[in-house]
Length: 113
Length: 118
Image (cartoon, chains in turn yellow, orange):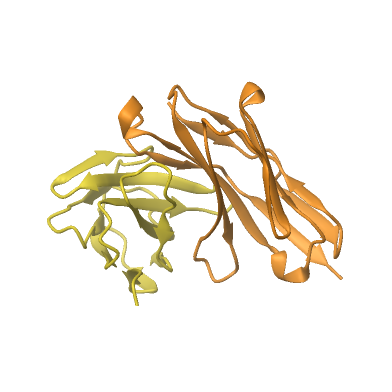
């Protein structure tokens, strides 16, 4: 079935360690997005990519990095520079046509201890 | 810059009541797109409805309807005859157009928690 796969669903890391969240899609979408969700703060855009080998910072990019080497994959690295990394992370993809909806993965809940 | 505001943090209704979720947006794009998503407790966002900026016709789809008013930059969403299964967090979202410089950025509001009780 076509869709977006985020793995793992739950992730625990020690403070100071970098961690990479996986996002894979088989929908043949050009655009991909990463969001962070904290209680009461909605979805905040971290990074987005409209095409392979290109990406733009969102509203809260500090402490995060991404790559887009393949159309299907858009991994997010939470670096040790991110001061409060514990959150729920959602990945999405869509076509580049603005009127089409984005499809979301099931999310990764990251806990840093 | 894009911004989406959902002033209602939480709404509680009794089953079968109608409920309207408010959304106000800001954008400099001349062409843009508006969406409503639902997030059940499982966490995955589910697409509900969309509207293009150049089409202000309001529509009804089953129990869902929406009121898009460009003059007030509002895109409100109504659930008619609410059900317990409608309980979720609802997000309004705005997407710019690459044709008019919006760059496909997809911005969400802070969400409204809807609780439908028996």
